[in-house]
Image (tube, rainbow, N blue to C red; front, side, top):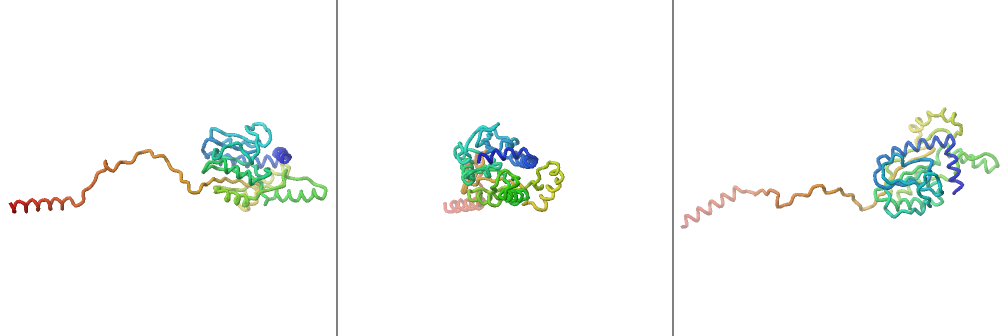
Length: 262
């Protein structure tokens, strides 16, 4: 796992790595800007400040290895936070690098408050980039070629949605991005800028990376707002008397009968 983490950090310094980081940074800034609370945590990828646009007073970066800017060094499958203590958790490629992504996701569910949110970025196994990675893997088995991406394992978008659903999460939004071919030359990457617009319109599920936001739902829980005004008591409310005219007529007849009898 450590070799994969180091390899991913080096890969993000390449032209395709910078291209992918720029897209993810734009998505994260839009997503986290309007998520409110007190405590937010990013797991991994110090090259990407995913909480920069968030306004929570307490924001931390946790990494599995010591890294510049990291506040916590921890195993992602055993986070040092009590249950229901975080309002937002970011997982930028963290599940792909985890030795046990299921346990990591369960741990994220544990530390999130009800209605807390998790934001996840991952590489899409159904894309031009993944195709080149599989082809390079075949070439390496034959004794030549090199990998395009620093990792072999991918977690598919729909597979991840199933995992989240089983843990009680509800996906609020999701999208794909980075449709350019798997090229390592920055000049050639720019030649295919038009593919980002076309791919988002015509083949949206074939982007090299996906992004989603999910909210933790707790069954049977209802969030109540504060009672700003006390309700008026029944004693102070005006009471209408039904058929008051009929009561007056009946009282007048009784008085007349009494006088006649006397």
